[in-house]
Length: 198
Figure 1 (cartoon, rainbow, N blue to C red):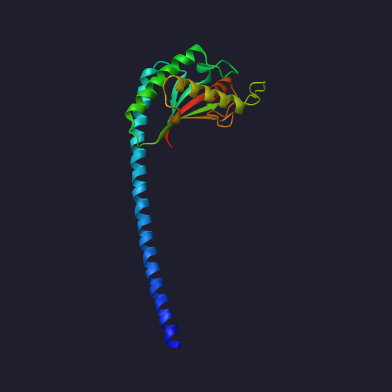
Figure 2: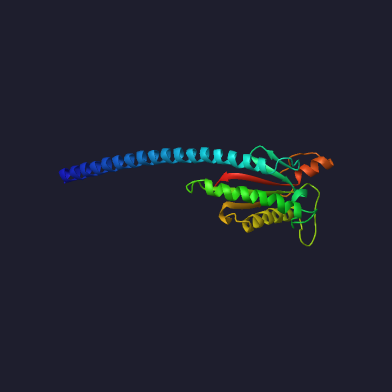
């Protein structure tokens, strides 16, 4: 019986060692795959940065001379007044013209970015701190989101692929300027566009 138990223990030890070896091999494979995935993602991010730079350069060229449209960091910013009447999510004529240029640039961008880069254009709506309360927009959240959706819907109507667009509303909670002057309030009422990876 003792000999049989020793054999069983030896067999269990062998099985345990084999299992530990397989586990170590699996861990090594996971590390290798993780490293390769991180390298591939880093390459995609770098490529997207290059396309973002080209895209923003093209937009700057299309919209040059307009003081109400500007670049803030990695975002393209339209003042709300360019696109919408006060308290509305229905675009005005000037806004439609500006978005036509934007849609042209996005469609060109779609053709040039390789399909393996999973990118999106995020459209963010922002309001100032003054509260709104109407039947159409019970809060600034509603207004900022409706405006972002209006921009996205218009871009889709001009040929931009819907899966490349994201609409988000921030209400008054992401101000560029914390002040309460008319200038500060105007800066905070905006639509921002950001080219990013999904």
